[in-house]
Length: 355
Image 1: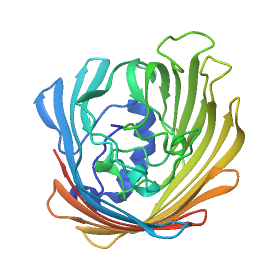
Image 2: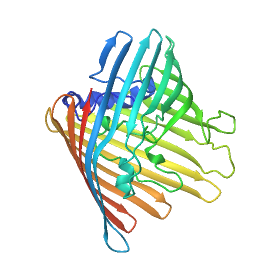
Image 3: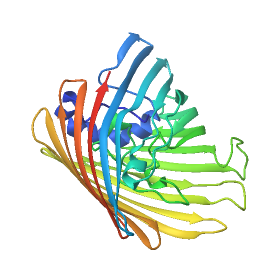
């Protein structure tokens, strides 16, 4: 799980949409994976616990180019997560215990087969030492800081994520999804009044942090303009083998709030380099979110990414959400998806309980 600043599916979050989005990217780089839920249970002054339970029903109808309709339906628990957060002096950290059902949203949206359920896992485990001058050092297992949709299901505006998958790069455009991408390494960060920077060195093709098998990620955020948050960065992928495929990515995104509206945009470029493929692919996303009332909001998202140099994945999503209680929220999503010559329609209902 990434920095959990409160779910847009809860009443508290709906009341604070502007504050949530402004803090979303900044806190991602500042806390480097620390969880700060609006409903965390404080055990003592040094330890607190939060988490969520996520369940959904979805129906994806895909019209195949060869004729016929492929119908995929799913009903059940998608994910359960429990997070232990500690803070002692200049040292802070988190342990995220996760049970993630691999009926994940990217597989569903692509019309793929459902994978087997995963076992309980330590999704993230890291600690950070922060100096008084804003410099920090983090070590452990953590997620990427790139991308706008960095949150777990409890922090997203929609049920599904924006981008489709690629046979050579997977869902790298969704790099911030910690259910798919986590690293083990060390990172150095800096947090100023309006600028935050983070430089991560983490494992590449295997668990050995050797010079020729070391991934590097540089990310940033800027909040010096009122109601505007800018973020982005670079990922340099080293697999440590001439026969492996490497994926370097550049990402930039922005979010602007005005009145009851939030507008966001994102652009990514992926450089795939391997013995059998050499491609430059791009992706973009536009999102508009409108707060209807204290309990209801609606998100409209347009996204597109190149699956290959000759195949595009285009998606239009509308997702109303409603806060049933302060801790229980619901999302209804309708997505129209075009994958080359194939068309798909996704309908989903999601319930998320946060604590």
